Image (cartoon, rainbow, N blue to C red; front, side, top):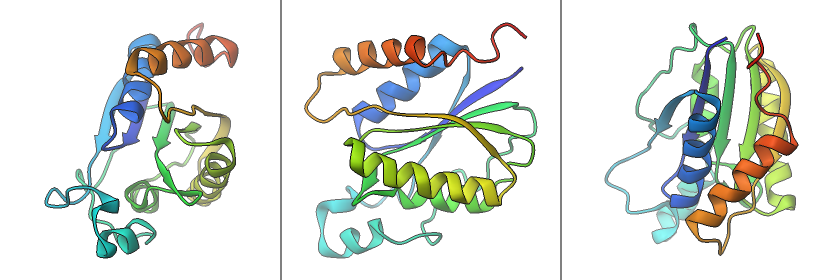
Length: 165
């Protein structure tokens, strides 16, 4: 069973969670980026509005082919309980038919749950099946602590789901 970890982030914490998952689960790592010329979503009034838009955010790569993968980990930072718009744009463009998906986000429990619910709804509409999720609160943590917490989550939630197959 082939596994990939897809994530969008400009933060080191979300990147660390994704890298830790990919290393521990022997998965391919796919990074999604939005507009290169933006310094960060929240750096101006205009970008704050853009951060809450859905399905209009340019992403790179523009399409991700999941035909070779059985299990997909999909993660995002959130704003006001919503997933990053680049991830929503990606979900709208990708065929998740027959894919098992594990969602993760890096925010508070309340904001993270809202983002997970929205992502799950969109993925279900695109043919995917949500089999697990986790919220890794990373605010204020050093990268080493983020990595350690992610390793603990992998073991606690038994995220090596396809390892024995």
